[in-house]
Length: 112
Image 1 (spheres, rainbow, N blue to C red):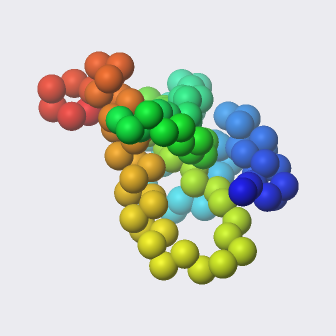
Image 2: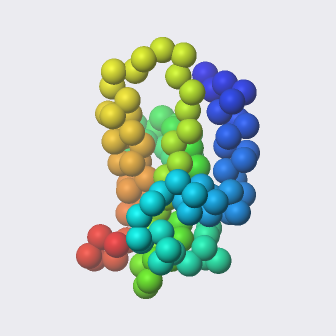
């Protein structure tokens, strides 16, 4: 069950200016300066698994990085208890994103 903090952060980072500020302010990697922030597009974060279960993910944006699209996955979730399998949950969220991109034929043969 999502907390009111989850909803507040999702609302905050649903604005492209905030995503840009988050990346430029906290990710100290050279590739961030190569992103074309004018191309930021919010991508659906709601998926249905192959077993037809709904999965509400967090905020996903895509942005141009040269000639390619880069997907920025913001997983903002407050936990009241330790989840020892959080890494597995994150992998499944990313897998659902890739499944959706494959269904939409949004990936090139090289996987980009």
